[in-house]
Image 1 (cartoon, helix red, strand yellow):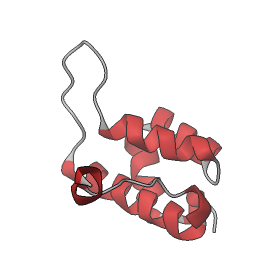
Image 2 (cartoon, one colour):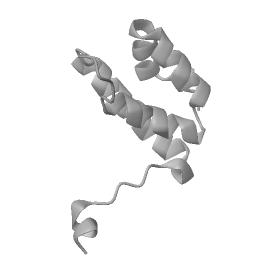
Image 3 (spheres, rainbow, N blue to C red):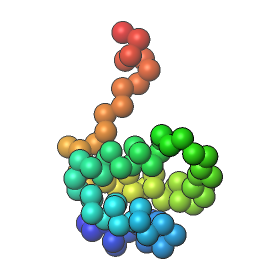
Image 4 (cartoon, one colour):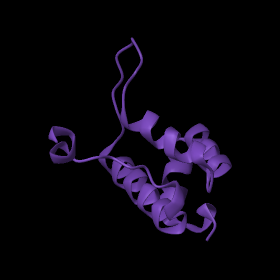
Length: 85
């Protein structure tokens, strides 16, 4: 599957072409996972408005599609229960 064929990518790319370019470039690479994490966490010192809800849902769908297509690259997030052990 190519990311460019996904409607969620087209939505993100239309509104945020720089992000779309990075996602397209990193599709199928470990960098895609770290880019998605960076998009979800605000690490800048300047105030940001955040993404519109439709873009948040599109990014989540793209991350799920990437996980399904490339399960060996899936981000492993331990649950809080695992951390308590």
